[in-house]
Length: 171
Image (cartoon, rainbow, N blue to C red):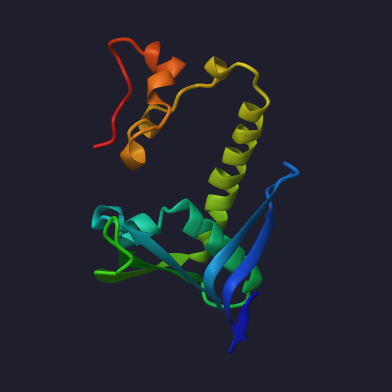
């Protein structure tokens, strides 16, 4: 932890054992305080800025919230999640716009997310990592067009086999 003042930590190191998978999830939380998480994000387009509703479902923020909930289990029933979002146009190093989005999430929601989403997802990733044949992996068509599209689209065996049905696109 780089800085500790008044129970606020900058770049707080976290480590969470993921169920019985033998995997330890590690990360660094930008700003960590009692039942409060702040994360900073830069983007070249405001379309990637998260809303309160998106923050309440964001994997990274819910995992951070879960870790925070575990550490501060004696307290309010909510953890505050916040994104400090900075717009930095392409080929620039200047912030042209900043937006803070903050929401409160029930602590129980972070626990439920960990148990019903994070652990099963990690277990599935372990299964997929053991496969020798990429075509044995069930495609996630919703991922094909996210974040500007998949870099492996031209060589995707699953996409070539999709035929007329093709991948489902996110709106």
